[in-house]
Amino acid sequence: MKVFHDPDINQVDFLDERYYLEPSTKLYYPSVTHVLDQLPKGFGFEQWLKSEGLNADKIKKDAAHQGSVVHNAITDLFTGTKLKWRPVIRDHGDGFIENEFATYTEKCWRMLLKFEEFLIQASPEIIAHEFKMVSLRIGAGGTLDLICLIKGELWLVDVKTSNYLWDSMWTQIGVYKKMWNWQLGDMYPIARHGILHLNSEHRGPMKNKIQGAGWTLREAPVRKGEDLLISERRYWNLWSAAKLTFDHNYAKIVDGKKVYSPKNVTMKSLIEWPAVEPVIESLIK
Image 1 (cartoon, one colour):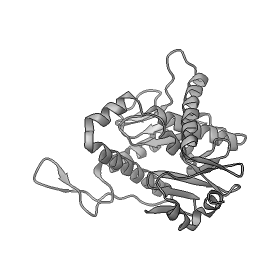
Image 2 (cartoon, helix red, strand yellow):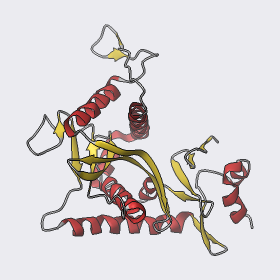
Image 3 (cartoon, rainbow, N blue to C red):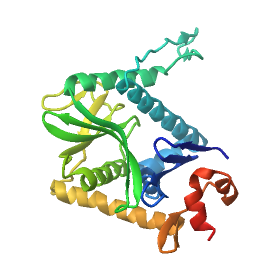
């Protein structure tokens, strides 16, 4: 079983699971997104799964890969790398055949162009990007896509490339905001947070909105009759339910400490991998 470990960012990926090392405890904590996988996506998502049948898994994997490619390209952009797209080789039909040496698919490249439009329109002052955090208070870790100043206000921006935005996505960014403000809020409090959706159905710019054709920066939706605090509390309640479920399924109490055991990795493969020795030592005592 392949395990991906990047010692520079103290992050571990076990297939579709992600864990972050907390330096003071030397223990790994699950990612916020991994915890939120415990929540149902909702009726619309379940109907979509049924309609796609056997293709659903492949579509989900392709979508996840697409998101990773776009996020990695944005990171390259911020670190000074010049992005290039090699055009596809068209066939004689209505579709196209991807050049095997193409850097990005056409769809990914269009999303990167939309991200460039966002940078031009919003003129954000970048404070941090791909910022990794672990919160002992929450018991989870995560990667914050973008912290930036827009028109004098500090924003937390999460980049999404999916067709739709689910409640779990708003819960995710709401938890990230709490993580940041609990640890760094005294100096740099986040005032606003939203999702930069690079695959939306918006037709173009709109007055007093940060958006363009096929993309938008959207703040968390507030239901009719709710104020922002009630809306944020509702998403926090979703997180609490997901975390309770996750801890029930994965956590063990060892010497008074909560230790997580990834579901997709056998004890043998964990023991063979030195990076998780603190976890192993706790588990096998």
